[in-house]
Length: 394
Image (tube, rainbow, N blue to C red; front, side, top):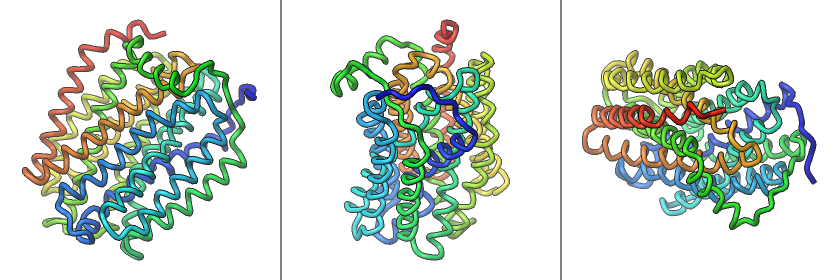
């Protein structure tokens, strides 16, 4: 049964933002713990970095295989069920006694924590059209804050109770959030005359027939690769001299990144006003500028902090703009548009994690920053060649 259009109350927007942040955070608790986990299981930098890659690949699989179900099934029930399954994945991680078991828990958590990407298009559907960009900016800020603050929370919990404590606490929080969503989310289901196989096939059809989606997916993919390049190797840098930080000190840098994420909220409002092209161009330029500054962070903490703020501001601004533009296309297919775009986005994250761990293993922090700068230049080139599609955006 399809529910009527709902107007979003401020309280419901806040709840959806919190739920989005908490669910996506499940994939990022491990990042400030990589050095500790590497010692626990006797891993190299490359092997430890693969834990992050596994999380991103699990998330990408969930985006491709599960998120399209939001255009087919009743969304509240789907969101609650997947939240509980993500909590189960973290319980497996907390109980793991070897790397393969930890990877199993990690991939299951990633697969089902895509509930965040069901909440985002639901917010877009329930929002008034004139306020859609603003609502998306708020909900997406919750998502990026979840990614960044996961590191802070994880670092503190690990220092006082060990790294497994992080996953026990996170699993409990996910169960509590599932109960809150069951209580307060409206029921919503739309009628799509497609079976599951046709639903998945339609995602590829959308890519073939929608140049704007392809272009924005590539921009998002390369932008999030930059994000993963920075944060995957951050723990290795900060755990080593001259910093030699503890897990909680490493996690504190997530607060710095959160400042950049919050500053990017206005990108959605600017997109509502028809300034999506300018916002994207400006964001990619800031991203490029951030890397030489971040490179100096190998020996200068102030430079590192400035670089983190600039990069996170740019990535979030570009991401919010991408989704605001995409959601103006085919409102009846928002979950499939999300699936296509966000699958590309998190494939970029997995690629960035692999590049980052390998670059740090072979060339240290300068190699990491060089890799990020090269990918950003490639992104600017793709945007320069593809921005013409924006001229035809309604």
